[in-house]
Length: 129
Image 1 (tube, helix red, strand yellow):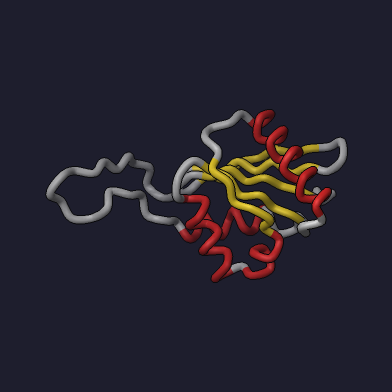
Image 2 (image 1 turned 90 degrees about the horizontal axis):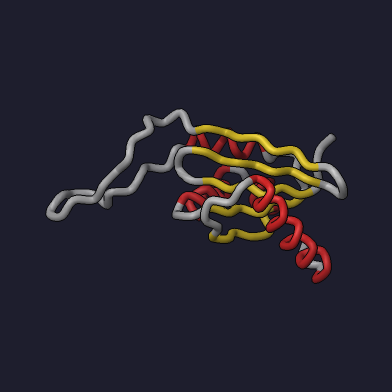
């Protein structure tokens, strides 16, 4: 069964997705296949010292959210906004179903679900979708 709401927490290495409806929830992960390495910025060197966005990874996350009615995107750094921008350009159907983008550090799945339930209760109450 397709769930009504989902929160996706992502960084450049993984996406944790929690889909839920009234009493049921499902959690799963999508991992980036890009080479995992830490990038450190060094003074007097070229480049920004940031991990590159992985479009195949973003496509996999978008596919995992293909049937969810409303999506909240969260994460600790720039990956969440890069994902949103990519979805706007390459997955317009999903882009219309994203109801928000929030900064959220490294929650457990239980904390992620609790945050999403609270967020969507407010969204549903205000009629923002």
